[in-house]
Image 1 (cartoon, rainbow, N blue to C red):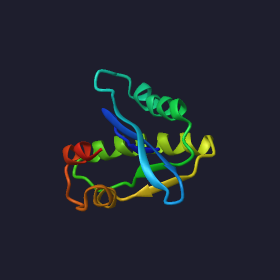
Image 2: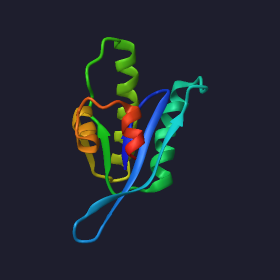
Image 3: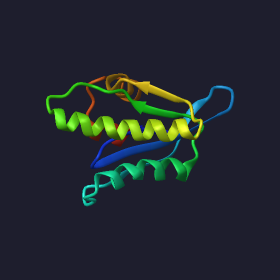
Image 4: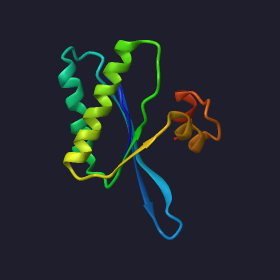
Length: 121
């Protein structure tokens, strides 16, 4: 399971690997829209619900990056922390990847937009 944590939108994807070549296959992907939720703690609880819905064997999460807005970075850190804690509590191995590496592996360039990635998935 891959998670792109956020406090207004949380992206997720479930990949399955089978066979000798272990080529990943997209099972499901989606976005949890939390904009209308006013309680920030209930927003964080949604990450738990997504993980519990799919029972993944592994969790891939976007590594932290630096931004200009400190409040946004703190909120993102909370969302990442909740997803990581949820995986730890369920004994799910966690792997962190830099945003540019994720984009490069999917599109061939680390500068792809979220819209470009969505088209490919």
